[in-house]
Image 1 (spheres, rainbow, N blue to C red):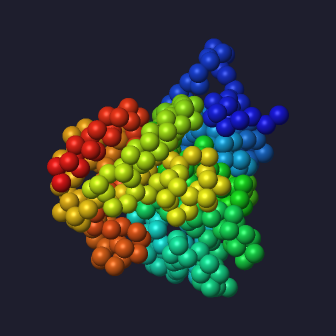
Image 2 (cartoon, rainbow, N blue to C red):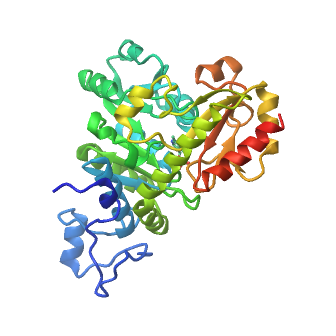
Length: 389
Ligand SMILES: *Cc1c(COP(=O)(O)O)cnc(C)c1O
């Protein structure tokens, strides 16, 4: 009998120690010992699956990975020290010099830097498609294209990409489809269902959900994961057992936390839409979102990120942030504490205005990460700041 997501987030097959502890203990150990010479030989020859050294595997990282893989419906997974560690490790393990990537243009900033600044050093080029024009993907595919890459919902514009469409194109052209599922979490959307070969998460965001630790994980096809695992174990971006233990515990409350995040976000988005000082509000589960139907099809709820544009451009954006009293000004997201950012004057300030507009960032745009405070308190703070404009 297949278990529901809430159960998969909690019940994994962890072995217990002789103390029969109920909650998984923290295995804070760098290495593991062998029974005898034969045990050591068999372990190193990989005849036996067992923990050897925590750069390779550790019971805490294995438990965390198992939970994410189970929720995503994936065969296997590998954990990393950060989300970027997972993204870099995944691409570096699979690509060779001369390979080509087709990627959505709206992707996380450091991923973009990886594609534009570092991969070209190894003769790996990337072509980009606009998220509103996925029909152009086929025209970007070349004989050496190996990976199709996207995030949905996107950051910070919360655009939605059609996972079923991406899955079909990847299959037709024999590409590895990789989805950064960070904004949706394994609870709201499972890209493997639509043909994604690999799914990546920055566990730093909603998976931890309380702004404490960094972590990353890649799950998916077992053969690809094996390649990525071997790369990871030899290159050293291992998730620490302590962080894995925190993240595995966090997974147990992910569904209830994300339910509340989404419920509050929808209420706040609906209220913001009526505010006279706001031009537009974008939230996947608002009927006004251009891809509302698609969001409903592939996500069970709308997530916790809202984008909205206040009237008055860059100056109004900055002045809005200065008037915020309770919400945090931080570049992070997916925390129990609500966070507001003004991408045009901060994270995306280095882009020219046309480049910013191309990824959907207008001068007055605010990104709100709805936290777990009472939605009325979040809304009150936003409103008092809007009233000052
Ligand atoms: C934060 C983030 C990352 C990078 O994760 P880190 O844990 O900060 O390295 C990657 N993708 C998305 C969509 C993110 O929001």
